[in-house]
Length: 71
Image (cartoon, rainbow, N blue to C red; front, side):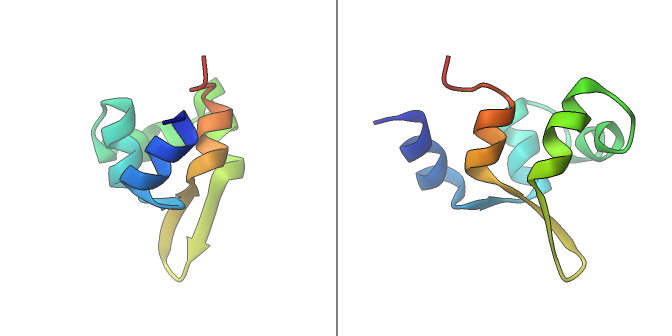
């Protein structure tokens, strides 16, 4: 099973902030704060964001690429 297969099976094609926090081992509020500050992680994750109505999701495969989870 590849990293792609695992992440899609666990989270689906779109991840919520709660899913991203679970993957990174942080709280959802900590993820929100770090996304709106100017850090390296926020610059990598912002292009993966998708708004659906008022909710914010992250494209799972782009998160994997942004965080270099293959290695």
